[in-house]
Length: 560
Image: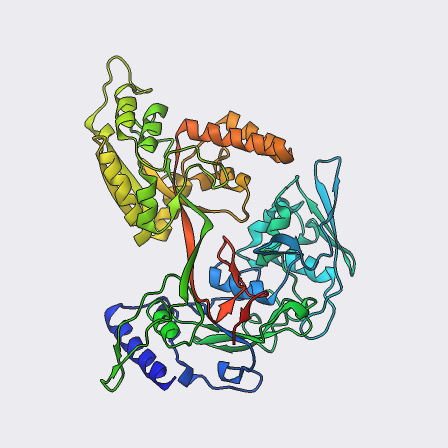
């Protein structure tokens, strides 16, 4: 362990010299080591942990552990293991958790839907009972505009939220009500088939009003952060680790085998070394054998070989990357649906996915089937372009050389840049001149929401649940999230029909809407991002990761 500590100190120095400011440096936080970690009263550290201990690399010091404000994978993963909502998603799918069963559903005359949930007997980590009031408080706190919660938009499924968000109604009118301690009544503004899946997200988890306020200062404080999930926060050392302990008050504690989880905060430079020395059992990303390093005294420190049981596993994520065409483009070729579809046909989606570490996306939604080709058909694409006239051209107007020039704007990111290089090559093979323009976050947001770009934008979309509808909703008319200004009344009607239907009828309407969207050619699906996790299978098993990036350790075990 001493070698590992010295080595980590040396790596901190080298990273500072050669890679510039990191996100931790920008926030004033400093990477620490186990050697610098000391236990204080009421705050445990990893050295205090006995029994079955899982060491997991979180990667960063989470900005917040407040369910209403947490949006990053790291924050959501900690919350997913310390809190529990009405439903729980694991490798087995979505199942009742704090709810005893699936809800009773009533369709109301005004088009709203009422869902009634009955809570199981359960307690908070300090022994107080979990009640329906804790859910009502948490959801209204999240929805309240005064709290400026990042996850407030998720309350948009509830009745009256839109008026609340606009200041036209009080937050107490939100469609959630504790009928009694065990009964929670939820009113949705319209039928939402995937709502129970949404209930697995942090925003819908309960909170104790007597323990939290409008801010999130309580969330990383072990003295204040009571929880109702399988683990509870008992230790936090800034920049170094979270310590989670098995919650003896958890309703399903008999099936939780871990005594502790130690969540390290090692970046991608440190994680392979930590795994080689056996200090961590699991980390996001693929890990390769690190080279020997030099410690602070100039001595060579030999890094052990990674165990042959260290294995990487990959799953598809809920994030998709597509190219969208600005409906206001001045390029007469791009105004032609046949040309847009030809450009889509010429894409080598397999090459783009491999460049970005993802998998080819063959429809707008990963759930939409294989409507597109994974490889390019350049010959057919050329034929389509040569046979297509400009919809905007007149007898006296001819296409200019500019029509063969395309600019693609994207949010600055190495993976996106690599994928778009394959797009550039594919379209240059058709005779186009392609320019790739990286933009910072603020500029890109303006480009997307106000259509402040010339031709094509690279869109990255993450769905809150694995449902086909959520991947199509951005393209409803006047939805700025589409990034292209797409409007088609036929598509809108099919989506509306799907929202009001269920079962096979709903699936059929969504598939028809997706086909319509693809035929119009304003959206060119490219690839689906993936999530890779490396673990030592000889040491840990039973963990799972969801498409939204949340880890679940309630069923994990450490092998002795």
